[in-house]
Length: 98
Image (cartoon, rainbow, N blue to C red; front, side):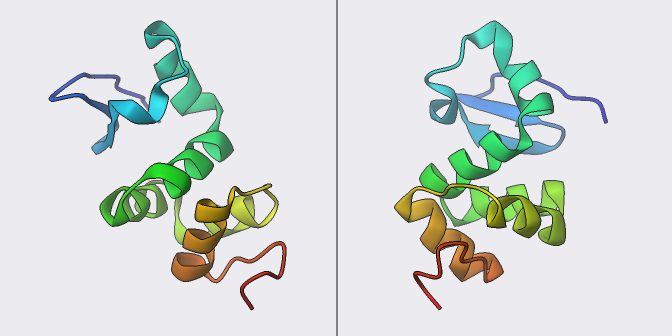
């Protein structure tokens, strides 16, 4: 998969999916492309924590519903990301919502 890193109206693009640049406030600009390619779990958790509904839908479309659910089920999720993972995918690793 080829990763494309573009700034357009304060967004970063991964393939045909655009994510707000603000998601990557703690990543050096020159490292964002590598982070998006190599750190799927980090990207998923970050988007589920800070993204809007369209951003979360984009992550699920990008990585696939089953793969996203598998990765998030094994992740230590912050509260908002955990709630969104449960609402979108039925994932509840801490059994807090079910």
